[in-house]
Amino acid sequence: MFQGSMVALVTPMGADGSLDEIALRRLVDYHVEQHTDALVIVGTTGESATLDYQEHCKVLRIAVEQAAGRLPVIAGAGANSTSEAIEISQCAQSAGAVATLSVTPYYNKPTQEGLYQHYKAIAETVDLPVILYNVPGRTGCDLLPPTVARLAKVPGIIGLKDATGDLGRVREHRRLCGKDFLLFSGNDDTALDFIMLGGQGVISVTANVAPQAMHELVRLALAGDFAAAELIDTRLRGLHKHLFIEPNPIPVKWAVHRLGLINDSIRLPLVPLTQACRPLVEQAMREAGVL
Image (spheres, rainbow, N blue to C red):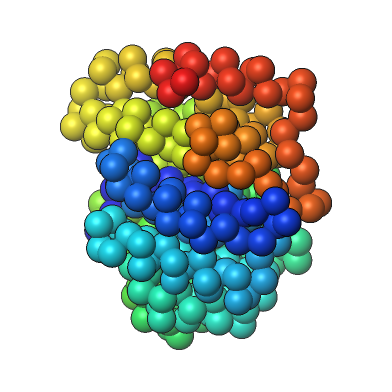
């Protein structure tokens, strides 16, 4: 259903921290023009943790409206409360998103059975495809491959964004979940290897800054032209690294601002990229050919 370079889109904000609708619409058009394969809205990179429910739904509605069918919109819809995750998923459905990306419940550390029941409840309640999202480095919770395999049998659960950085899990997930279960890398720096091992693409932070290059990298990798994909990946390695020099999305919001696409605003408790780090991100942008 989905493959390619899917951008984990930043959420533009004005100087006062309010949502910047004009800049959001501009970003959607930019990614259409740059051949990004899908938009992933209001995930980690989209500052979902500091958007309230009304803002979350508003961003989704604007993105779907502006995309106007030109590329798919996948809605970040995770929460550490199952009922809240269902409510956000229902909002995504009413907004016109084509699927949800649902992060594992954070902070409260559910068991594997709790994770299974959490996702099963979402899939059974909301009539949208669900992509699981495992990022234990941020959530303190690891969705293990046997649990993913159980969930792959639940109608409506179609894939996994794996941000563990453990490439050994790609083959394990493919073996346990079958060939039709979608696997997406959540790490730009290992995305090429992930696809070589059987993944269908990447949900990418780097694609905010170098969308055309990420699209081409993934297109070539999916076509089996790994040597050509590696040439692009080499050029982007500085971005893969330095867009995480401070916690995401701090560096990437500054980089998108440096491209002239958004204001350099981010919500507390995050603060803008420090002056000391800006030359490193800018140099990576130059190496990638976007400046």
